[in-house]
Length: 159
Length: 173
Image (cartoon, rainbow over all chains, first blue to last red; front, side):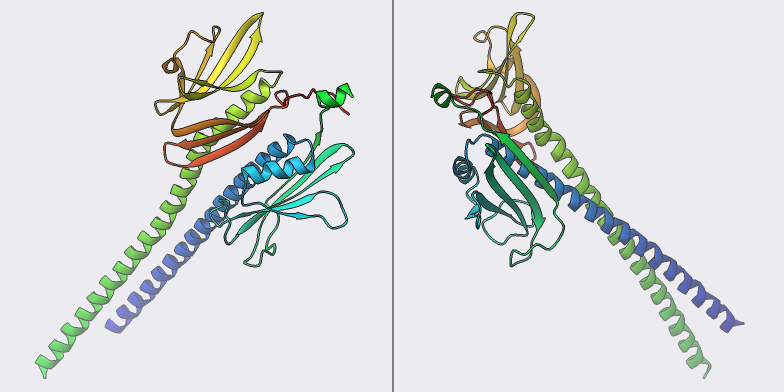
């Protein structure tokens, strides 16, 4: 009789432990999903703001060189390189894991290509996660393409 | 012999009670851990949302204000009593209005007046408590705003007012 009671108690205990682990696993899954969603929202927020800011700076410039100089002024972390076989400039702005601009190890990168095409200043921007070697490790978080008409200056108009 | 059996029995019940207490403690500890995870996630979400609501809402508001008033000479940065002020001019029903946005005594304030000289910095309506707010004109037409909110979170934005750009008009090549 006593043996049977202990056996039932053991079964009861095992069932309660199983239920507990099941509920804990569900909770952890939900929290991990919430964490991922929160992180994605932060990434999207940072990417859209950074690209909108860059677009505003580019739109204030009248040429690729002027855009490059203005970006250098407002964002010293930006690294520039020439485009191979095309006119224009490519730039990379590194971001750390806290989604802040950095000049050290990057966890994200904002890349942009600025070109002059048909009297318009094109800017093609992408924000994505990268590994230690700077290789893209995931989908682009946010992409933005802008085209700005260069206004005629008063001097040009007089000519 | 009997005494030995009793002693074994009491030891077994002691171990049983100890195991039950350990299990209960493990359950309680795990429940607290799960709760802490939840609290951390909730706290992060609320903090982010409040951050977005404060400084970024202000910067978006200012951006929209500038774009709305983006006409020749209507957007400028001035200094009033040593405080940099974003000034937005507008005309409504023949009356000229001027809206000023600036930081004074720990708040970003907004003030709309008809007489641009007859006002004091403390007259503005506080719109957000901040630790710092700096409006700057980096280049003709390119404005920079830096906002440090009351929780110490920094947000910055650049706004280009096309009409302010010196020596240009809106003609297309």
